[in-house]
Image (cartoon, rainbow, N blue to C red):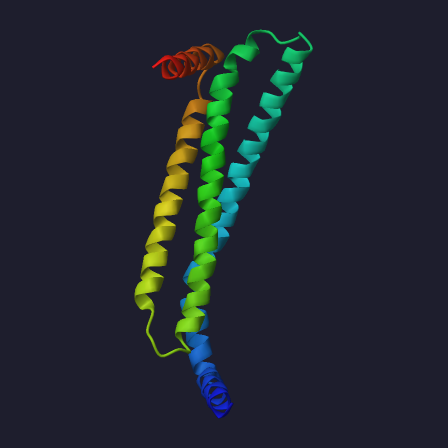
Length: 169
């Protein structure tokens, strides 16, 4: 029991330094700004993803009602774009969560004996890898979005042909 009180007193002593807490808050500003940027990216990515969901659902409803024209031929390409967009959102969300952990670890590291700067560096690099992957996937999705209807139908036929080959092979 006395050990617990001693540990608690030591923790309070370490955290009572306003200057130390200010230093940690300053250190956490860069990750917090990055978190805000990720939030803005997620907003844009989610808008595209929502548009894709709505478009796919509309075409599928039209197909069920027998009102779909050639648009139905574009479904595999739209679904592929949706997949890229969803993966980009997932990686961006994971990056945001990792940045939250970085901020928490920065605060914790100020008040414990074992230095965990290496962990912060690893988490930061992991965040950059996750963001890079998300941006590459988002770039791929937006690149595919530039295609004409004819190009989307051609891409859809290629996707379906690959699926058939995988099923046979």
